[in-house]
Image (cartoon, rainbow, N blue to C red):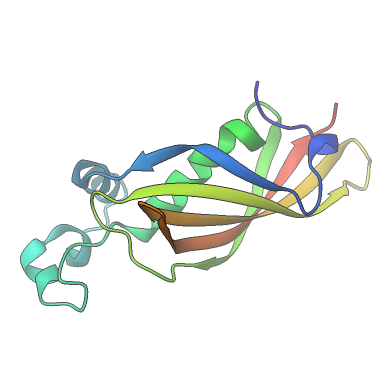
Length: 150
């Protein structure tokens, strides 16, 4: 288990997640198929070419889900009881096929449960596309977890 126990989270700490992922057309297609989301902006190049983006967008829920997955080894792998909520989700910029993303999580709050046996941890998760030295914020949200204590 690589995740952190409640006591190991520090409010204000930013965790830079080392794993990155380049999103392929196939990733986006499979996610849309599995979730039955047939939005042409994600799947139809001819349709998407007529939009302000000029090309297909990666499904925003895939971007968010992938971001959570990339955070797991450094935050909650084997030490989580449950994800309690995802709040304040924003997608300020689009993600396209071939974009590489990186993720960072900042611990914004933590408190023990009323019985003192577990802890609730909130992290602000930020997702960036990387283009050389340039990074663009493409998704951000707050993730609240119920964590095990040591």
